[in-house]
Length: 348
Image 1 (spheres, rainbow, N blue to C red):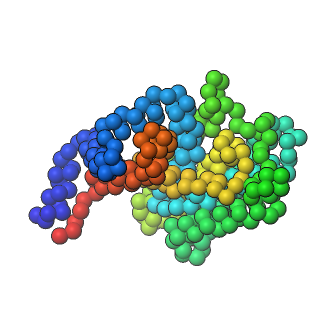
Image 2 (cartoon, rainbow, N blue to C red):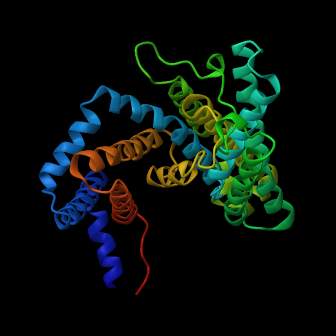
């Protein structure tokens, strides 16, 4: 028996929940050591992080706000993953979705009824995101180009499209900055009564339920699972694997485009150079932590959103660089994806 196989057996003998607890605990222990090097007592630091993140209503509301586009972006990765595809293009699809929503506002202005404007922005963002992902799907089907490469490269193209628009045709001169005109108040996403949380989180949670149902309870969901598991077997069973691949990527792109609209109409209200920065990549990581399952994605995005909010409190309360939470995020990812994996190792 090789050492690798023995280590896997030891890991597999520990219950799944226990492995998650151990993995996350190790990540926090290592990060605690890092805090000590900065002159911060880790127990005091974690206590203040917890209090500022989870005991303040404003922080909890901010977590919910940040979760909305992350959930939609993670679902955009989960659906293609079920078909055996890797969608790394959430960042670009989110940007293009925001661009499409802003384009609708540029055309309709603030004279259209709010309901018409919001629905038009929503549909435009989903169509744009689907079309952007469709480019990668077409190259996969008819060019044999791996979708992980094309979706990743399309992120940079989407960013260039955004920069071209805000530096030239859509630039709002009075601001003096490369940005579009701010979205009119009636066109902004409504907020939940008594809070600052916009309805985008409700849209995202509904999307989770719909995606779960479609993947687990419909023939289409079963077919893409078969195609993702064994494409040749799916072909021999008479399934149109090409169309399944195309539909999985396109639907994923539509959800990412919707995330762009939610971020635009619920948070940013204008396009600027940093619009949607890192949302797609964080969504990608959240989906992998959740093992591409819709319901656990909610928990994973909650963790990432909480870490984002905690970064501000670390900088203000502990005088630790806000970017330090990126290290904690990386440690959690490495620990969770490594220690909780149930895949056998066959290395000698």
